Length: 314
Image 1: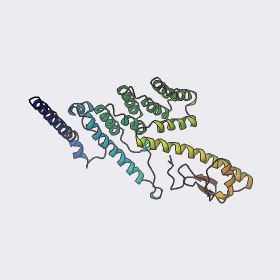
Image 2: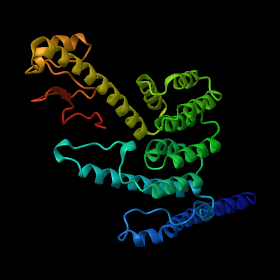
Image 3: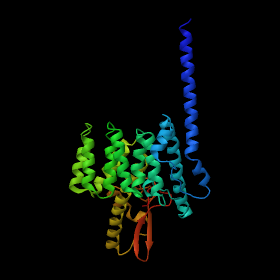
Image 4: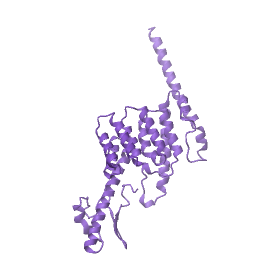
């Protein structure tokens, strides 16, 4: 019986410490952003007030919890920008704003948010993956620095090299992208990383390289938003290829008949022969399953996306 008393005291002490720690972390989060809350009505873009290192000290060992809080704040900030951008388009099109094409993001705010999160929790790998898609559009240097930071903090996460390669590839830095893939290839038995490096060195602007890049990002993505973004990029690439083929069919029809087709049904056979998926009513279908629109004007004929299509419009 006497041995059980110290055990109970120890359990009570540990429980009290946990409660105090959680309470301190919540209070810390409130203190960190007290000024931000006060200024919310006056400014739209809010960067974390404290330096990341200071916030890390104030977290009292609960950096992961504080990082989660800031992660939610970052997602809310990005969500507001996406909503605002979508509302500026034509209402009938109901545009979907892609993660790598968000306008009006404040680079200082976004980079500071990601820096805060990854300082509080350096092993929060999902943040690096998400940032590799969102951040390059507004601050590519910060994006590269953040991914290098993530690689140093998570040396076992070889796929972060792929995210770094994507940033360099998007900027046209094909040799730097190839180097990132090779660094990752040394950490895994996945031979495709070495193959990607070789393809980038031969011709980084090859459309097939783009297809392979997004396909691998889709396969490896751990963040659902990044996975869906990569899928949309693959749909966009396929649609661009489809429309190129369709324009060829339309051009041949004009050359043979001296006019544009009045409806898709007139070119049904050549569309199917070209390998395109065609609706029963004759319209070729885009990767989202929506019919392409035949555009007829005084200047000729062309093809475009249907308003209901979920294929990105660039």
